[in-house]
Length: 103
Image (tube, rainbow, N blue to C red; front, side, top):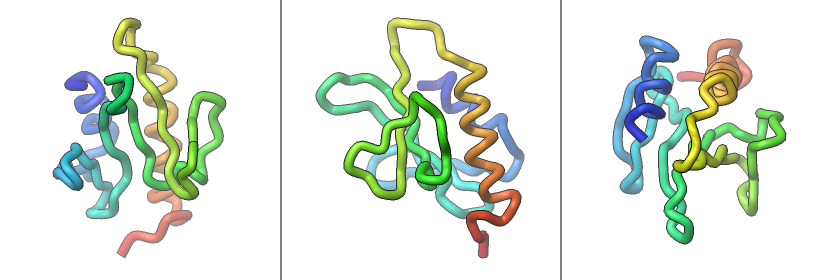
């Protein structure tokens, strides 16, 4: 979880961290961007992308969510760093290029 946190914060100087609904929330220019959380049933960590419906990746899961998608992280394996960085970049680009409006 700490490595994931560091990867998120290292993506851009304008990313800030806060707590929302009892989970670490990361914002880009004060707009919610992603969360770190663990699934209650399995205890496995995942990254939740707030605007995940804009992201296309075979390992992202929407489940019953209409807006958000999650990327599961297997705690028994090495982090898929390149995949995570790609997803973080794609998600941040939604805010940077104006797809997601920032106040």
